[in-house]
Image 1 (cartoon, rainbow, N blue to C red):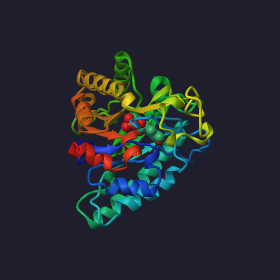
Image 2 (tube, rainbow, N blue to C red):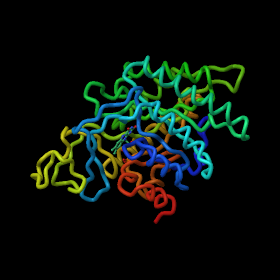
Image 3 (cartoon, rainbow, N blue to C red):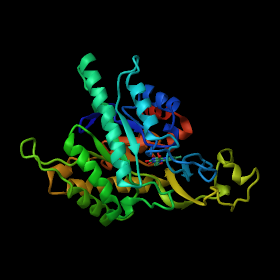
Image 4 (cartoon, rainbow, N blue to C red):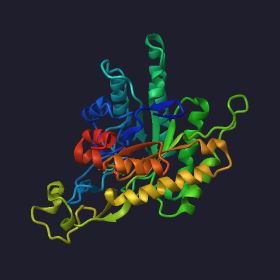
Length: 343
Ligand SMILES: Cc1cc2nc3c(=O)[nH]c(=O)nc-3n(C[C@H](O)[C@H](O)[C@H](O)COP(=O)(O)O)c2cc1C
């Protein structure tokens, strides 16, 4: 079990935001799985993202890695809010937190999305106080996706901190008004520890001083490390052809680009070492920070988690919980049992 602000993740394992957490059937499976302690939705925008044939995912021949060119979910946030309400009201399953992955290119849109989520939480809070001892509002958290590598017009803002700050301002205002709101950031892989320290020092600037309460606190309760490694290329000769997008045809040249976009985000086994390095880099940079509020920020480890050994490595690097996407796409929710039981 791990606690992240008001959110309890028990067991400390979940899916990371991805294609296989897009719709209600997939979310129901993840929610019902006894080995997930929380569920993360695919990244939603205010109005939904228009997909086209350039958006695809391929698996490498061993099916342990993926390369994808997806943007965000075609479903708007309002749809996920309805689904969250439905899941949290599932009578036969014990409630588990749902992390709403969201993003926006404009800070005004992000502010609207946060208001919509807070309206849902207020409604859940008023209903749950009437029927149970726990507060269902604490089962809805926000993860701001700052790291999708597949939007040509909007490079990941977490690689360029001035672009990230207006979004952080929106989140900080929300948690100042309501400290029970749990907020995390989805970050990209960083091959350079100085960049990691820059991010930690940037986040530290937003620490909220609360002399009347328990002292200073960070508005950011968790960091999810890492998203896929953008700017990666895989060729047709390296992939499981059953995952090939239609654009590749039935008998592609081995040197044809596997994705219609050529470049995409790399996940799975080929990302694992860099994801571990990023998790370790953040764990160390957070632990070394002079502010206890910054030291309290948790790291969720993602990237090539596929079995017990890889999950153990993530924890050894400092992750309080582990999550996966490629493993989920390959094996469905069974992957969580495999990670938990070491089979
Ligand atoms: C097909 C696909 C779609 C993804 N979509 C999202 C997304 O919508 N939001 C997000 O934050 N990460 C997204 N990711 C990244 C994953 O959450 C994860 O960070 C990354 O794939 C590394 O984990 P893995 O090695 O277990 O795949 C996606 C990954 C894949 C493979």
